[in-house]
Image (cartoon, rainbow, N blue to C red):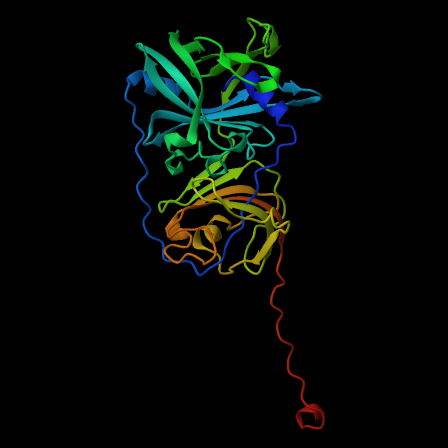
Length: 366
């Protein structure tokens, strides 16, 4: 669930998790951009659901570093309402180490609903290996670009009953739920939050009823609300650019320069269609090369060390002219995760030397 301890447990169990790969930019003469479809409206069937979503939405950072084995790090949890036709009253939540925001180790859909008149928050995992859906990473920062995930792509794991508590809410699972995480056979979860603070605790218990993992009774993990660590740019035609915190250096990518990067390209359903990592070969190209329009715009002024995700609507990608031998369909939206390795400055054009008169001519004797 979202609670801090479960998140830490997930990270510990996933030690050595492969980083999210960056996607390769396919090249082609850019098709003319068309107006992007209007984003789906986010609506709430219950005013209390909207209030809860408003309190949770945003970015939360652990109040103190979390220790897993010999490591110590901060954890960031981010929430945003998303419009899913088959899953009403939903939020998307993403949990990551503060030093690896582009590689979250937990992604879930939360659905607010009522059970016997009481508010509950259901946790739904993506039906994917490790629960990862690469196409939606970071889209809590741009929820209007969130794809229409089907309920058939989700697996319900927990349900937490919520009750008003002062200016916020608190709640817990109504009973233990089966689990196999960390050697436990069942687990419980509890949370408490308001506009500025979030506390949680997940606990796993063995077949003898003894605590296997999680904080002792009465203890919780604390988070504080912080400003979004991701810089988000959304153009009127639907191009989305998410820039992650990273140490950039050198000059910005510009005229006559050559850029080298790793990337991963996926479709909205998470299908991988290209990856420089799988080829074990970084991708390089010159500024102004015939890349798809959305990629070219999204990578303007990139610097060495940049970590960026692009959501490129079909008209800014290949439009109707899909390359043969690919998994793409006409007007496919393409999502790229990009890690810039180097920007090499181009050589400025040198002026031609003044012409030298041919030997023996009158000019050569002057």
